[in-house]
Image 1 (cartoon, rainbow, N blue to C red):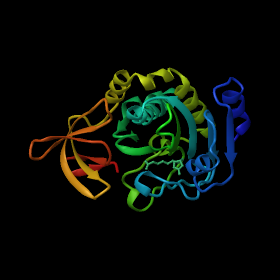
Image 2 (cartoon, helix red, strand yellow; image 1 turned 30 degrees about the vertical axis):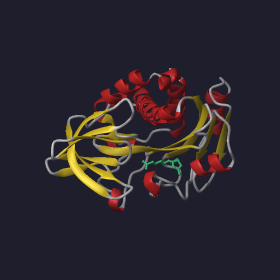
Image 3 (cartoon, protein in one colour; image 1 turned 60 degrees about the vertical axis):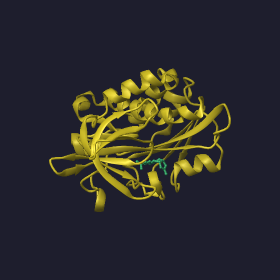
Image 4 (cartoon, helix red, strand yellow; image 1 turned 180 degrees about the vertical axis):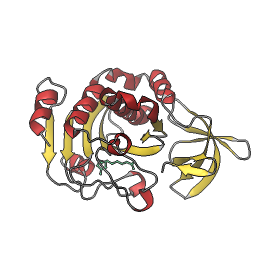
Length: 265
Ligand code: BTN
């Protein structure tokens, strides 16, 4: 990875304060938390050996092929707005890919709560960590895993995951994607506090409103089918269950059901 270009394009103009490049690290999120890194710091690695996904899952990435990074950012937001950071980041990640791959417009979408989908498969995930819940300024670690040049997906993710390479047939420069994301992230960042506008934009890119989904509440393994009616401004999934009730869920995950097949994670 050419970290010089990242310094030149992201630190010199004053977007980021610091970029920490690590040849190898267990998890960039964990590194940012342990070292109590300050706002506007980006941690990137070529080889994340213990990458973490949501709900304690493993996030695997072939060394040198993809983007594994954590952006530390402080926001003056309330506890009830912390989820905005996830919706904002996933939206900006999508827009940053459109900047470099405009032809993927029709294929890029968001899946609740923070997944980036490409042609119906997961191309990126977000893991957030916020420990300043009581402080008016909340420092959030935004951990992003974006599959860029990955060509093989094994095991249970084989039919659920994809990458920019898998969809376009050509390799993309990791540096260019990182620069595009950071620029996009810092453009119009006040949107994070304008919940109604943010969620409207997010919903416009959501791939499952009005669609049949299978919902999993990972805390207790509960699973149910229903129709994903909406995403509330509070970040909740509004699921119409099979018995006709509209239930709000604040955590969990969904897979789309298309003619009997489940799509995505
Ligand atoms: C998910 O389960 O969808 C979230 C995946 C998040 C992976 C990224 S890779 C960089 C950062 N460091 C981690 O250990 N996880 C996140």
